[in-house]
Image 1: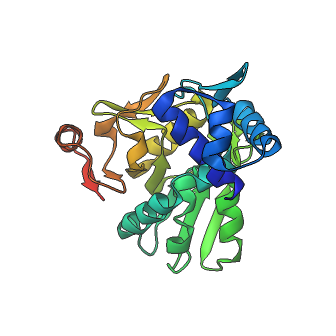
Image 2 (image 1 turned 60 degrees about the vertical axis):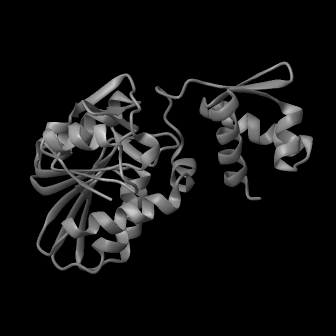
Length: 251
């Protein structure tokens, strides 16, 4: 089992039990004590767990922003499906804001075949992926690199976004309810909000794990979205609330 698979498995176990002994975790993962110790240390550094006297507890996740490398591999299959579904909104001769989220980065393969495309992003990894796409003109914001996120934020990045108008903003989130969209970071949220303000349409990409999740920073209401693209059908209650707010739901 690869490291990111182990980390995901540990979190899945803790989401079910909230607290578990390190001995039980070691047995469930079939790993050595030293390997488990390194994995737990990494999750603790991310702010996802707390280690206490031979047991591990899940930290309440609402206000935690995971590192990009972990987010990129979390729900990867679902994110690829979402990108494929969201590609219906793309077309030639468009200017597009794309945020720095791992979900949005999977749109790169659908951008490169298009003609006369302008992409404005604060995501370093998306920019690097588009580097070889001769038909895509890529603009990358200036500003401060947020450690471990692959994301550029800050006043300089915000000012850069203000210089553009886009046909489409493609963003993600940490949670979405029937009333609004949420982020675990006000700096990341402010960048997305700026993109939304300068785009004709906004498309939200979110996998099913984000349904019903709230965090302390409210990005905006559902009525500010044109569409929500996800990997599986939401509940009837959520779907009804989103559609009543004017957002199309695709999965």
